[in-house]
Structures are given as C-alpha cells and as structure tokens.
Image 1 (cartoon, each protein chain N blue to C red):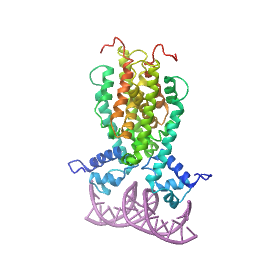
Image 2 (spheres, helix red, strand yellow):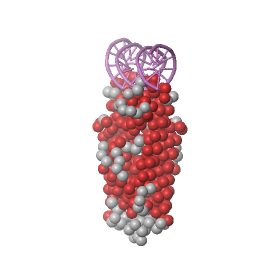
Image 3 (cartoon, rainbow over the protein chains, first blue to last red):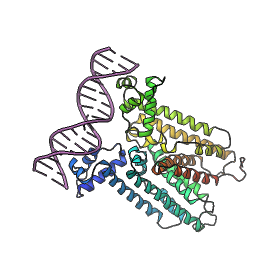
Image 4 (tube, rainbow over the protein chains, first blue to last red):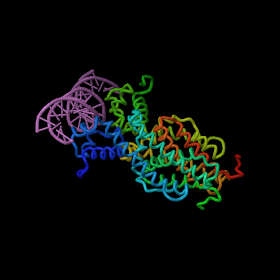
Length: 198
Length: 198
DNA sequence: GTCTATAGTGTGATAGAC
DNA sequence: GTCTATCACACTATAGAC
C-alpha cells in the first residue's frame, strides 16, 4: 500500500506496475489495483478511462525504466564483449521474470495493438542496441568477422528471456545463470585472437 | 467443439489443453473449457475434482507430447550438431509459443507445487537430454573440449523459450528464427576442425 | 454419467452524492 | 477529485434431479 506522498494517479500506476509484473494483465483486476493503491473505484475511473488505459500507463513506465537499466550496462565503460557481459551478468530479480517479456504471454495484451506496441518496441530496441554494441566490437577488431551482430543480438535477448522461463519453472536462479554462462562461453569463441581488450 | 467420438473426459482434457495454451491458467475458466468440450458443469465435476485437477491432467498430457516431439529430433540419425540443429529448426507454431513454457508466467501454476512439477520436470528433462547429445558430440570429437554440455544445453533451451517471447511481441516468427540462427552460428565455432561429420 | 439450478464471490464499469 | 452504491455478468463450486 502506498500511503506516502505520491499522488493518487501515481499510486495507481505503481500498483498496476507491480500487479502486472506479478500476475499479468489477465490476472490483475481493477479492484486489486485500487486496493493496493489505497484508492477508491471512482479515483481510478477519474484518472483513467478503464483497465487498458491504466495498464498502458503502467507498461510505458516499466518499458522506459527497462531501457534505462539496459542502457546503463550497454553504454558503460569497457569493450563490446565486456559491456554485453555486464548486461548479461547484472543483478536481476530472476525469479520475478521480465516485467515486459511476461506480457507477451498475456493474450489480451497481444490482441490489443496499443498494449502490444510498447512491449514490441522495447524488446526490439534492446535487440538493436545489443546489435550496435556487437557490430562496434566487430569493427574494432574485438570480434572476428564471422560474428553476425543482428542474429547474435536476438540470441542474447532470447537467452535472457528464456532464462527467466527456466528459472521460474525450477524456482531457482541456477538455470538462468547456467544459460547466461553458456552463452558467454559461446561468444568467447568469436573473440579475435588479437583483440584489443585481451 | 469436440462433437466426435471422444469420451467426455477426453474432450474436457483436450479443451483444457487448448485453452491453457492460448490463455494460460489464470485466463481459462472451467465454463470456457466445458463449452469448448460440449459438456455441462456436472460432467466436469464428475470426472475431475475442480479446475486444478483438470489442468493437471491437461498439463501432463502436453508435457508427455512435448517430450516425444523433442526426442524424435534428438534421437534421430546424424551427428550431435545435426540433431541439435534439427531440434532447433524443426517446424513450430512459433506465434503460439511453448505450451509448457508459457505456464511459468502463470502465478497460480508456479504457486502450486503439483501444477509446477510437470512444467519443471519437462524443461529439465529437455535440458538434460540436450546436454547428453552435446556431451556425446564432444566425446566423439565433433565438438572441441571447450564446449560445456550442461551450460550450453541451458542456453539452447533458453534461446528457444525466449525466441517465443520475441516472436509473440513482434507478432512475427522472424525474431525466433534470428535467435536460433545466431545460436547455431555460435555453436559452429565449437565444432572440431577434424569433426567426423564435416 | 450428465443435466440444471443455485450459491457466493469477483469483475469491469457507471451513477451520483459529497 | 474522491467516495459509496449499484449494475450486469463471469467465476468456481455444490446440490440434487434425471
């Protein structure tokens, strides 16, 4: 419950963000959002036109935050490999899964173009950003010419998203870590023998 | 609607399987299952104790089928790399996602040990089976000694599961294919220069 | 073994008082 | 801007007739 100095609208968005992450769109009711926000029914329907509208605000904010977090790893110091490695190994609440990726399993989100758009854009942005870093590493002689930045970027994003699936199935972060370590080992094989950062 | 010669119990299970795949556990109501099966309320509660019991029967059957399909690729002819490649490139209904993997995003499935067990076991079996094939390939000189079968197997399963996430976000199979191709390219780097199947 | 009836609760939304 | 009251409907399950 948010009883602090946030506005009612802010509390509703934050509550929706948490519930969408925990239970998804289908599993989250307006009533549950209102209760967690400490707001009445009327407040919610005053600030938002309905469940989809509030969910959209929540999803957009989560997407924004996800980009900022990823960008912090990918635009940091070090070579391309180290930055991708940093992104993959950064601290995560693995068992909670990805707040954006999990929405792809929500039929009502995928069926609504307006709700799906920020999900699609965020994952595609991440893939593109990773592709940029990998391409940069290849041009800089850190990776061999055989590395395909675009496809490899897709593999990196998929490994992370799938790692969450494995972790939640096992109720353990171990399979996520294993998948990431396996990917990093495979990537290592494409590092140039005379790579600058070696 | 299953109006053919299946028993009512069978029709209920098949309906539940479809709905769990499409809408997940939280998004699937007993009523919807009954209607798709062409059965009344009483029939469902005669054959099953309730929604979790019917879902368990449906999940177990889907898990069984998923193992059989994977095993067909992994125990087929050819070398280890070709069998893993065959598993990754086999025809899939990519936009529908994995009927087992999607359940990990269902809070009520993960919270119930009985429902989670077949999900966990199936994904762990798949990981183990892939690790066996990769280890076999390494012992046979097809892969270099640097390949870690266990971690790489986790990466393979994660890439597939995450590929579904990307595909559903984009409403296109392209990101799935891209992720799989990227993974195969990375795996290629670990093939021994004098590999038997080259 | 299948059906309908019913119960009690939750859902998503609107109306109107304050 | 926030509240409570109310709506029509869906959810999960039980009871009891056939």
